[in-house]
Image (tube, rainbow, N blue to C red; front, side, top):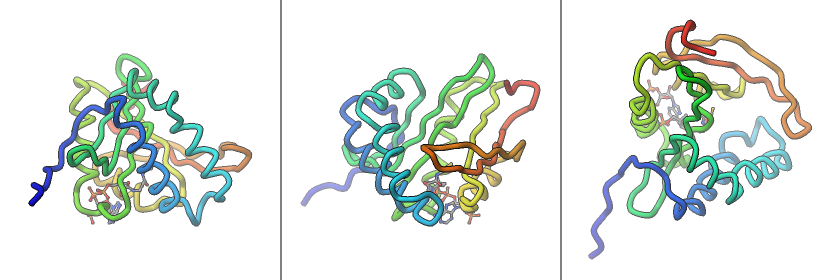
Length: 169
Ligand SMILES: CC(C)(COP(=O)(O)OP(=O)(O)OC[C@H]1O[C@@H](n2cnc3c(N)ncnc32)[C@H](O)[C@@H]1OP(=O)(O)O)[C@@H](O)C(=O)NCCC(=O)NCCS
């Protein structure tokens, strides 16, 4: 009988690229199917999660995965913007494991990598209420809303910040 691997939160490596691409594709379709047209989703997912782009992000950012053995269930990408400000550029978990506290552990594992005082900012699609509830539950507050052109499609993004505004950009 094969032993079941425990869930771990660890830094992503180059060997994880294909699995991260799989998680991004599935989770993007599931999350944005009603919000962002399919052609835009496809283009974004393939460009932002191309092998080159992911290798760069893994090498430059705090890029964590939630994994059981070699199987990746989710990832989070924390990008430093300044000495005291970090952007949570992505946090995605496969649909079947959402709502079980794994996102909370992944978020906290990333936050813990940066010494205080650090502020964390992110942008979330205005209609992604589930993610906004999740961020609010972790202390993020809304600081603005912008409309932005995204692959020839206009998206409305809510900006949220965790930490003192003085340390934000
Ligand atoms: C947002 C996300 C990372 C949260 O991780 P998670 O493991 O699902 O969230 P947790 O289980 O830690 O926390 C659940 C809480 O967040 C909210 N929540 C977020 N996603 C949820 C889901 N799919 N099912 C149930 N609750 C969800 C609820 O308010 C819940 O609060 P509660 O525990 O008081 O009921 C994850 O749901 C996800 O990947 N969603 C799709 C991708 C996405 O929207 N990413 C953010 C883009 S900006």
